[in-house]
Length: 447
Image (cartoon, rainbow, N blue to C red; front, side, top):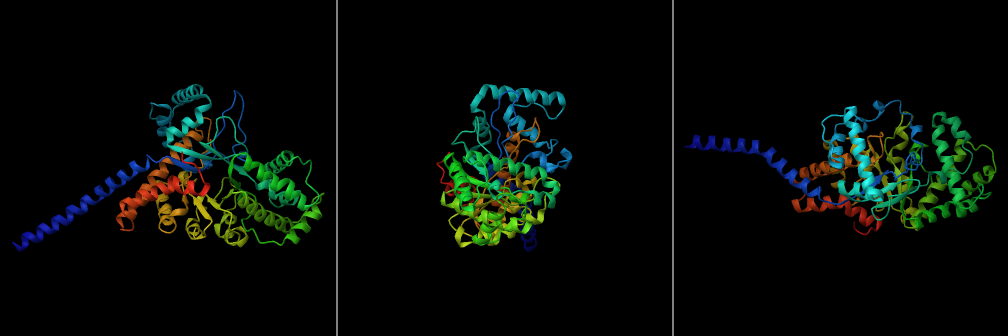
């Protein structure tokens, strides 16, 4: 009898062990089904406005895409390459694609189907896309909004890097000759902001520049519906923004505003001062400050300059406590460093771009690190943008949103299994990450 009970006990343990993966999978699927119903708020994306025949939307980013030096589509991360089979799933979900391959003939059918939907939906097409994906509001990182990208479904995040570059950039071009096209983009934006501010040329004094250009531009963007401003600075320089005395910045500006070539060290002082000034003014206006902190596109990108710890001093500045900062792309691959930075009360992070750089399993590890420390600071984002004429921001948004939802379900299921949270708390955290943290950060009306 004793042997029988022992055997029965062993069999029961083995049976339970065999059943455990199925139980966990069932729990994860149940949670995923719930997460799929959440109307998300996408913290970071590059949707394109509707265009007329033959027209091209060039305002979906402030820096020209050709500046990133992609030698071929194979130089893109695997998740973004047109061969990613996830795009077939996106085509099915969005446009009724009926095939299992990407043959030229079938892709031509896809393009025709997409164009048909666009004609049928008209100006509602961008909102129709969000409906199909399950996104309530998308924060659009763009030079300017445009046709179809209407509030409240689309909210503007403008670009402000150009405001840090009022002087000649000749020394920068000599220092980093491969960045020439990036500085072209900055100079074009600087001219645009001067013109929109009613200023014909860079003002002779820094006080005039700050009031007539910097503050005027920020206020104009706020009045135009912007929720936040965006720095892409890591593409142009290191993120070590020192606390520079106003007198030092004023001296550099006065010396070179009318011409001449500032040295790299001199220009950095002015840029550092302007970064903190812009961030402080944005906070005064109720605009969040988004910063690209992550590996970047292109062969020339210097990863060491995008380490989030370079921002530690600036993010800790007592003068900037009224400014909310968002670490866009979550600092990848330095995501654990970002987890620590989230302890600061005005710092948030989204995991956009990681949604195409990482598999759901790998992304779930990042999300869990953040949720175990500061769940109120984690934001969902896609970083969706057009990849090819056949794979637009729409397909990218569908694919990355699906990845994010699956990764979040994995992270929360693991936390439940480890006894860290209840199933009820998992539901609450899912809503926080996918929408409620963003609603609180931006003061959004629910969508």
